[in-house]
Amino acid sequence: MKAWSSYLGTVGIEGVPEYLTVDWILGQFGGICNEAQEDYRAFVRAGFVEGSPWKNLRGQILLGSEGFTEELRELLSEREETKEIPKVQRYIGRPNIDAILNKEGMKDRETRNRQIHKAIVLYGYTQREVAEYLGLHYKQGIKGG
Image 1 (tube, one colour):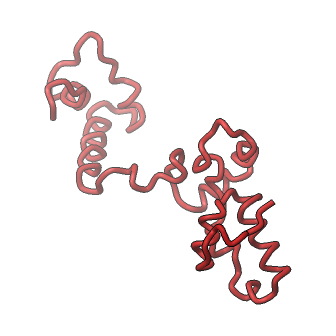
Image 2 (tube, one colour):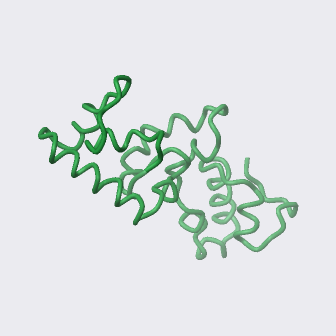
């Protein structure tokens, strides 16, 4: 571990500097200090083996399973109206584009247009994203609202 890291003090290899508080972090791993330190060591080791958790980040703000994201969808839905929040964060719970643009519905013009409208207006997909998914050029006049 790096010299500036709190790891050595947290796991008890070195003394804990006066400015460092380790009780809270070790408390997340159990109530008995030696066991908590060993569990913390295992946690840190797992991070080296499994790699960065950030690769699994959803919408730049959530770490967790798809089910977890779905549970939070209602709480996040009101943020879809707030333009100051980046789109990728506002529409974190939106379905994949292929779930919205049903291939069967593409045969009927009215249904297709409703699905395109829904993808753009309700779920925040861009006209370019929709057009590319459908194999069209976005300047061909996809109507989104």
